[in-house]
Length: 293
Image (tube, rainbow, N blue to C red; front, top):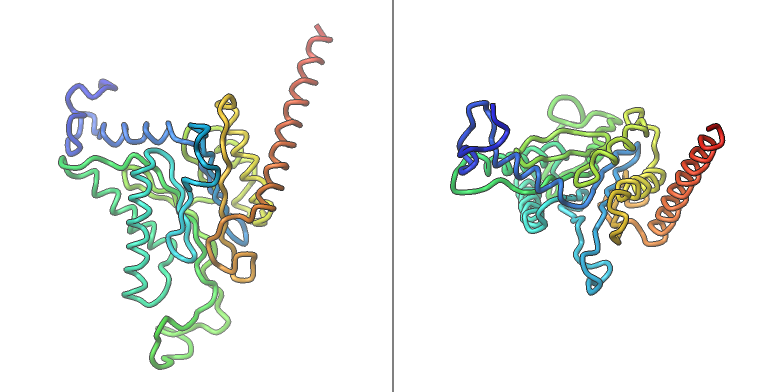
């Protein structure tokens, strides 16, 4: 079958004969043109980082944030068409607020990913709309302890079915990626944007599934990975933006916050030293090969 639309890409609600939705594939191409963004799930929290390409010297540093707080314990990052991403953030905030109104407690990570993914998927069904030109990464922390809901009346059963389990520790970090098709998966490490392949290769080296990476180490590794992914566009200046959410006994007390400036500066220094070390190794290797010849 042909790899181009040939008429089947004129509307969002039409499949090609080989079962493809070209409008969704084109939306994914828009994501690949955006800045690199990553999420790292650590043993005691989640880190988000994004490469913001400086498109003009007149842009104010620190403005035009690409990482947004969705709820107290949730953050979202996106790559692709920025206006689409901002609209998706607004929708995610509405979903989190709706959950609090209905259930008097923060929305779980998986439930927010389901709701936002379902909303994105709806935009692939009708010819009157187009798919979102963004891929988003959701990061949050679900409360580890069973606690009273907001405005709770009465105590209810102490433990067992329908009640609290004694000394139960649930929840923990959550990291989800939502694609333009509405598909979402839970990840230990996720990468989107122009440098996705390079960032993904670096994430796989960290063995995140073992759960040994601390939040502080995750911040440094996230900065390093963004610098590695930026190598293909190193002629362009960029700004590193980072946020994190920790456990309730961690630095953010279960809230999604920007990484403090002093820790961010230290992470950038670590990333630059790591890049310089890689360059020195490549130079030494190249020199050795020349001598052997």
